[in-house]
Length: 171
Image (cartoon, helix red, strand yellow):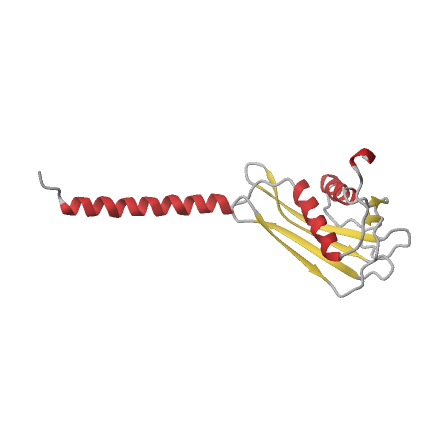
């Protein structure tokens, strides 16, 4: 029995289109799981050692994200003083001043769309470093805890200052 050549070509063409659509869908799902991160270091001289820091809250900051940032600092052995007045860039009793701006969105559940964290030299008020994380278009419902820890870790690494991470027995 002869095989219909046109039907065979049509089948192969449809199969190629199907495989292409499946690959595009898989790539979209995989790209949606992550976000992008950038760190910008200024030319201001960084302190040699950061042992203490304080948040200088911005309008709209939440206690939940405050705790994420404070936990991330604590993981590096940086103790935190009580929050400073909003907009404070100079203080005599800390080694760094930290601010952040977070953006949340709603899509079946709240998720972190982006966060920008900045560290300032409390002696001069100069910006030392800024880290920004932005979720992808196909977002991943990030809560912010792991994002904040990763961002702060990378910022401290690029800043090049020494910290004294807590050992597990100290926590």
